[in-house]
Length: 108
Image 1 (cartoon, rainbow, N blue to C red):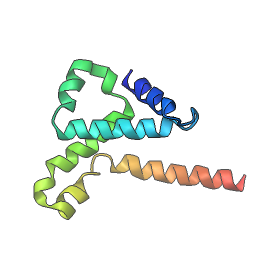
Image 2: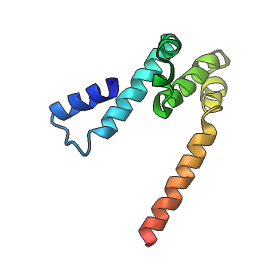
Image 3: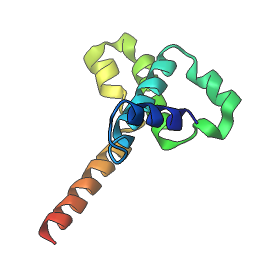
């Protein structure tokens, strides 16, 4: 419901309907990471249950949680190196898949 509300706001602000999905997803990722940083996301997830188990918010929560957990080890060796520990495989295979599909599309 929140995603649809944000989508409707972007459409109301003049973003074309076909393009309004991209800033909506970015906004939801930002909100999930922000709520994780404030320590509120887990409480909302326990209350809402599967409503927050969608990949976008779950991914933002996992990356932000890892960054918060390892921040005491420093910016480079802590936050920078370990924040993608849980989600690194997803990012790696997502980028590789996007490259391969883009290459096939360009050659086709």
